[in-house]
Each structure stands twice: as structure tokens, then as C-alpha cells.
Image (cartoon, rainbow, N blue to C red; front, side, top):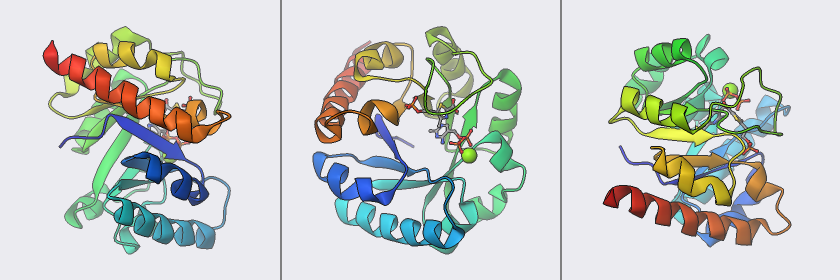
Length: 207
Ligand SMILES: Cc1ncc(COP(=O)(O)OP(=O)(O)O)c(N)n1
Ligand SMILES: Cc1nc(C(=O)O)sc1CCOP(=O)(O)O
Ligand SMILES: [Mg+2]
């Protein structure tokens, strides 16, 4: 399976009418601290907006809601895996991406037969407190050797300026929150991301 090289993560579907028209084609809805009813509403609307734009929606954490809503992709972290029914998702045709931060987590993730593996944080992130030291670029290459041909998503502290190194190290897709959503112009930053990730992917293919 191929993932778009630019993987945008948003905390509310209000971002979608702003950023889908720019050309975002892979978007994770990562909603925290809202009621289940609100998450369900956003997932249903997010699915519709992404479908209309030809974009792929990935639902973070809320795998039951995603399954009920007929979504086709979820993202699960290690603690999410404790109560997620991954086989039920897979039987329903829902693709699953899994976060990893260590060798043990990678072994566990691979045991679920995921559709992609995410590695993070590559660089320090200000979005959330994490017990993990930044992984660095060498880890990307190591993870890629372990998981190929599965796609590898890099996440954590990524910026447009860091995109070339991340792809050169072996990432297939770069996931980002702050560098886009906290930019004074999220639309133009997303545009820069699209250009940078496509260029980096093309260079990777030439090597
Ligand atoms: C692409 C991607 N990678 C990692 C994460 C983190 O997932 P998780 O560890 O479950 O943490 P939360 O995002 O749920 O706080 C992710 N969401 N997306
Ligand atoms: C949500 C998340 N998960 C990570 C992981 O390593 O699993 S890093 C991260 C934060 C990503 O946000 P930003 O692009 O603002 O650094
Ligand atoms: Mg999670």
C-alpha cells in the first residue's frame, strides 16, 4: 500500500475546508478531550469532506466510532492497542496504522499485521509530553529495514526544512501537526509541505 508523503494531523474538522482545497490528501483526525457524541459527529462529517476531496481520512484512537461510521483507516498507539479489536477492524476492511517508539513496541506492532508503522518522535515535539528521547534519523533507516515493504511514517517535530533528511533516511510519509496548524498561514505552509514532500519522494525514488 502507498501512503501520500504528506500526512497532516488535525484536531478538529474545522481545518478541513481550509486545508483540503490546498491539496492535502492524507489527513488524521486526532481529537482529544471531547465527548463521544462530538467525536462521532466530527468523524461522520470528516469522512464526507475527505471523500468529496478525494482524500484519505485516518481516525485516531476512536476505532469503534470509525468502524460504526464505515471509515476505512484508523491510527492506534500502543495503549490504544490494549483494548482495540484489531482483527475485527481488519475483517471489516479497516486499515490500521500503529505508533512505535522502541524495539519492543515495533515487535508488538508488527504482530498486528498493520498497514503502516509510525516512528516518533523523530525530533523534539512541543505538542505533547513524551517519555521518549528524540529517535533521530538513523532510527528511521533502521525501522525501514525492519518493516519494508510496509510504509514508514515519521512523526514528531517535523518541519518543511526537515523533510529532505527524513525522506533521505527512508520515511515514506511525514506526519505533522504544529508546523502547519501553528503557522501564521496554515494554508501556505501546507502548500510548502506538499511541494517539499513530493520533491523528497521523487529524489528518494531516484536513489
Ligand atoms: C501518525 C501518527 N503517529 C503517532 C501517533 C501517536 O499515537 P498515540 O501514541 O496513540 O498518541 P495520541 O496521538 O493518541 O496522543 C499518531 N497519532 N499518529
Ligand atoms: C501525536 C504525536 N505522536 C508522536 C509519537 O512519537 O508517537 S509525536 C506526536 C506529535 C506530533 O506533533 P508535531 O508535529 O507538532 O511535533
Ligand atoms: Mg492514541
